[in-house]
Image (cartoon, rainbow, N blue to C red; front, top):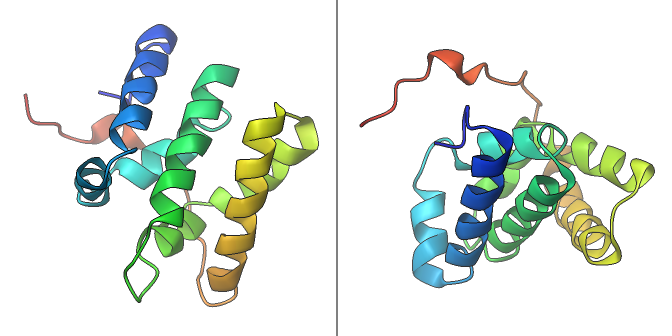
Length: 131
């Protein structure tokens, strides 16, 4: 639903997802969905300030609670250019809470950054979704 949703719907969906990712079970569901990280990273600068705040908050919850030895969502976030987008976010400015989360995310992502190659963003227009 988030892939091509209009601004208002996207903000609401991200808000709900942010709440869901506050629990272990919600994060587990998010980890298991293939489009979670690509969509969240893509929404950081594309929708609105509110959507950006929710996207950073969700990424923060997922990355800070990652327990897999291979880095899991941390590696995937780096591959989707989250590191660069978070740096730009800090340069253009955001509220203090989002800035703190982005800074902590950058510290955690930096550990994996040298061992991971970034890949180009995926075009989600042709992604088939179950109805």
